[in-house]
Amino acid sequence: MRSDMSNIWLERWNERYSSTEYAFGTDPNEFFKKELSGLPAGKILFAAEGEGRNAVFAAVNGWEVAAFDISEEGKKKAVKLAETRGVFIDYRIGELQALNFRENTFDAIALIYAHFPAEIRSEYHRILDTLLKQGGYILFEAFSKNHLPYRLENEKVGGPSDLPNLFSIEEIMADFVGYHFIRIEEAVIELNEGLYHQGTGSVIRFLAQKIENHYA
Image (cartoon, rainbow, N blue to C red; front, side):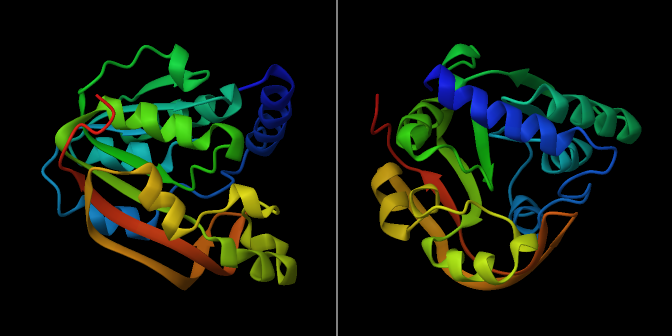
């Protein structure tokens, strides 16, 4: 990520996570919670994990958890939440390519509202693919390109305000070649997650299994 872009995103998320309240609450995302319950516990990586609500939930349920983000403020709150629940998460700060996660390490990767800047998104997805074991799973929920009208009507629902940083199913399929999509859908849902995911929005969500090492 270019340094100027990185600084803008870092300032934005450090400001968002600096308050006492948890921006997106402390409960896990409902889609993630449901899908994780159907998988055998193993090692899982959380991308752009923020304040840790999903990572801590996984740790409480027997997963060995790693996570990363660019926001030190987010990490502080994630570590605090983990301590209150009596679990540990390996939480690293920085850009993905510099964090020294090992290839073919994880049984699952969670991308829950991991809206990386459009300029680096496909590169990050490629790197994440190399970290996932063959046979491993990706759990994904994020805002779709059809989300903008909902955001314009209600800013409290959250999400990027520009089209390039939103997702289409076609873009997802192009980034995750070599996967079997067990389920994938675009849906209009009601969000009730903390302060910043409140209201009606359009999302894409999927559960996919890695069937070949496409980028090896």
